[in-house]
Length: 247
Length: 315
Image (tube, rainbow over all chains, first blue to last red; front, top):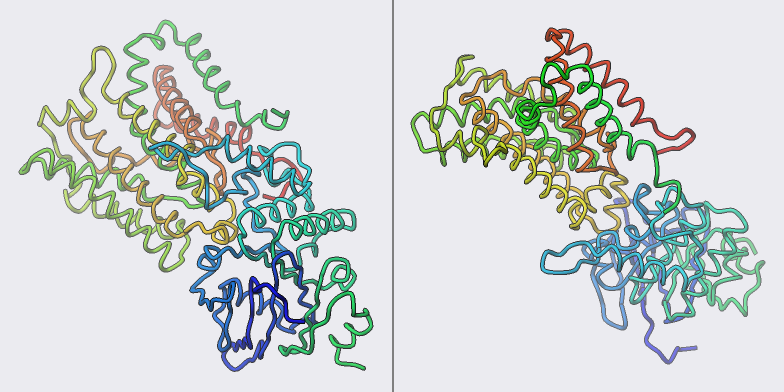
């Protein structure tokens, strides 16, 4: 059961309290390269809190986070990003009036020459290549985000995460705002990202989606970890029982 | 390029400029509207507005506003003229720019540290700065006699071309470089587009907001100094109408009032439109109250043509 490789991220007995409220207690999980681990649980089970601890939004009250075996402490989300961790949000952190290629490189724009001028041509070309690699279909990298459908937008967000995430992509309900067809397309993009060696931690309400995508499932209930299963060895009923606490 | 890039508001400003020129050329050809002297006068009169309009493109694109512009113009002009009576021109200009820097820093700190809307902060500093301008000179004008100063800032010419044209071109070139070709401009529009998304992407949105308000204060101060140089003196009434003119010029030029989109070249054309209108209406013999009415009506027409959001679109 012990993987031969060092996990990309290992969360070790992480605990998070907000004043008097215990949000997460002693959660332990790890994600390996090229693996999708799903984090499931009912509303308020603490899934988002775990993700935010890894993303540097909240410092854990106790416990450790290790990247490639080394303990890390993130002061803020930028710190986590500089360690190769990217987040894909449900509500799409994209600037809507800007072109796709600028969103792809937002905050990390490519520049050229001694005047450090924006290299729009390179950014557009690189965007086109990345979107093709994930099979995100848009007319042109020059299109603005608001001209795209919800699924196309999430495709852009995923491509951006894949481009910048050297280690880990955190996905918080990436398809919650999408229709059936668009969800299938985005799931395919997530698989492609996994096949390119990224480690992915997926938070999802949809057990169907979790069984379609994840290699392993980690279940939280009321802030506590109630178990972890290989998807191939688990059944839906079993996971539902773990989530609800009913046998 | 897709059809979508040919939105009306992208080119209507240029068409409007040509139409206005054609209109005045036809109706005023006996009054010398198209004479070289008059056209260069339009440039002279427009330059301070152009300089401020360039800065305001950054301010509006970042989703902020600076209402203190007009009163900074007056205070900086008065301080420059006042200091020059006893000190060197260099010190006087530094003091005038210092006014803009100071007001910009105050505006920026209140907006970023206390998280107050720039509309309210600059509304307050507008009154505060206007009051200061009136009190330091007891409402009196201050004359400037330093020839070197007036030649450099507004009164001089390079051959037939007024020196002010170079100030305007310099401001536009610098603005275009920073807005379109440097990271700073990209961060400004992203901040105005969606501050949360910009911050999540690693953009220091508070630094962006602080900087645009600082630049805006400095540009208003420079405009005040340019007025002082051209008019060879300063008075507290300088810049009183400029806030409306500058914002109109910028918005007509295709910059979104609520952030996320801007155009430096559009702002240049917008300020030329406003300047040409003012000039033409004077030549038409309109009284100052009639001019205000016409400008207001034309502004309404202009923003109706350029500003309408496409229907059914949530910004």
